Image (tube, rainbow, N blue to C red; front, side, top):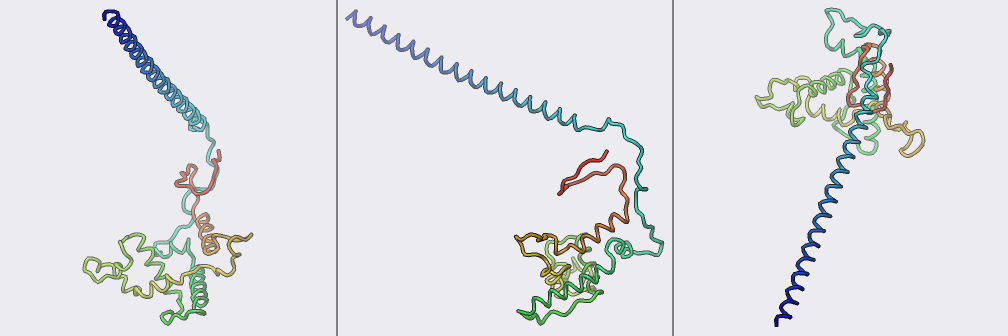
Amino acid sequence: MENRRNLFDITFDTDTENDANSDSDISLDSESEIESESDSQSENESADENVEYSQWKANDRSDLPKGPFTGPNPGPTTDLDADSNEFDFFELFFPAFLIELLCRQTNLYAGQKQRNKPDPNWRPVVEPEMKAWLGVRVFMSILELPQTALYWSKDSLFGHLNIRRVMTRDRFDKISQYLHANDSTTNTPRGQDGHEKLNHVRHVLDEVLRRCKENYNPHQNVNVDEAMVKYRELW
């Protein structure tokens, strides 16, 4: 019995010791791997930060000498007299012939659509109406309401807007339905060479951009915000 007990004790102790050593080895290895991964990750992050910092420093040109500004005199290029109003300023960038263009193209598009489905509620738009429609749109961009219909609301909360005196809601909606700035049939079909995505607004866009450059000279330092096209700095 004694020999058996000693044998059992030895076996038990040996198994326990092996288990302990085994657990210890696993624990140490795991901690070592975690520490190694953590150290490696920290080193990588530090390296990335150093690269980003060095790149930022490389692109930082605030300390570079700048020569005198040789461009045109910055600021507005057109002085309006004291009798001018807001619409005179608007016409500097959106001239009268563009309003005539909108009327002509809107009536053309409405006629094209009604060849297949006549619209008894449509009548050709004229320039005073188009001016009024544009004025309403500008007003809506200044004072935003949750729904377009609220601009014509008879509720006393919105009664001061007076848009109903300028144009009825039905007429505003009808002009909006057919509003066009270019003949869509002149554009090359989608997917073919020559198709232009900006065909619908090309004439208006080109003229407004030209007049923006014509009526204002930028200063030496210009900030580009939310750029949608590539550009480069000129030093």
